[in-house]
Image (cartoon, rainbow, N blue to C red; front, side, top):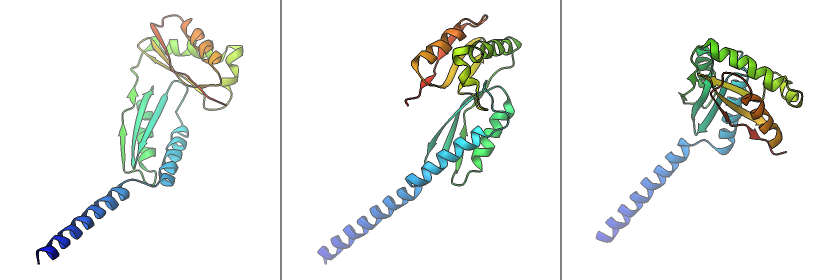
Length: 181
């Protein structure tokens, strides 16, 4: 009798463990589903109508949850980004950590000068082609951050040198990534 009871107990424990493992699998999307969510988030963010060269939006996808990161000039862009991602099939939760940059005429002037210094320079003009510029210029209280991608280390350094030469900037952080061909 005791032997049958212990076998029954072990069987129940195995079923509970198996059920918990299956629940955990259901909580995580398949690799194909995860890849689709990542692709759709990227597409929807790039299609935002007021997403420009002075905005930077990054994201992380963890299962069915999406975290939005970055800095934007317009508060409406922050809410627009959250709204488009919320409506993607399979996304259950959006954690919007996008920072809205403070209004500043000084920063606006720096942004314009940085744009001309980087995108108007002959060796970097190739990055000005297309609607979405690959070099993002973020200015917050006179502090400059370059985000995005370039073709090689020389272009990364050149963009940093050009940005460093703009007046009224207090610091420069060059986060440009080099894309491997």
